[in-house]
Length: 378
Image (cartoon, rainbow, N blue to C red; front, side):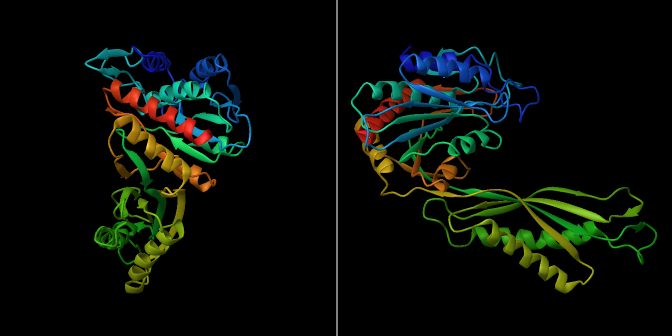
């Protein structure tokens, strides 16, 4: 195998299951130690960030000669569960040009490509700093990237999540909300005393369904299409013989650039107020939870333009641009003022029973990243 493939196989063999997803999971300590040793042996300064014990992120820097642009390559060390994997998830295996094992695709392949590319690029003269951010917890809450950004910045960043060798220039965000509909508890034989919170919530859900259809038919973002909304969970009632006093609906709203938590809450409030206007017994409360911003890369930024040139050089074909329906750490980097873009390997099986990375794509990503670092930091 190539240098990058050998490194990837070694990383797959290290258990780094996110313990916030799987109680008792190994976390990122062992893989952070292995990456630290590999990078330190090759002349990188390595800083270990560990606000939360057992959940380290590492930032490795190869210093430039000065007055150049700093590039950050970002990737996550954690994986999802090993349970249910078809075979031994920690025993990397090569078959038919593919390397199999948990995390090979999402995203230890990207980690290996970043490390090898950064080392090769560091052998060229560079005035800007080469920085690797190998982070914890992306699969749950992205606490690792958030911690890194409290301590480090850069002039451009590449998130090396898998992208099938296409350049991701935009992705959706999301807002999680909770709508609590209040009724009045009463014995099931006393409709004169009770207000059925579940039935009241049904009126809101009808309005939510209409709103979801309107969103899909509305104005579309040129890369991402439209936003979307759906009811994800519903909890209500105590027992069959009572009128339910409360019904709580969990809602997810996927957003595109221009949509915010405030605008999403206003949309829901308008639906709820319409129900309340039709029935004065209808009472509700909206609570916003986790929010992640959508991402739209500035096409003119130096890091985007450099990456596009290197993709075309290595593949001998015009780069394919894409948007993602899911959220990535690109949005956190952009929110911190760092122009960012996403590019990574081809493969399949993220979070699935069989996971693999295409080894030819692994070499393409390594070469593209090396060229981009050399050009950007020169």
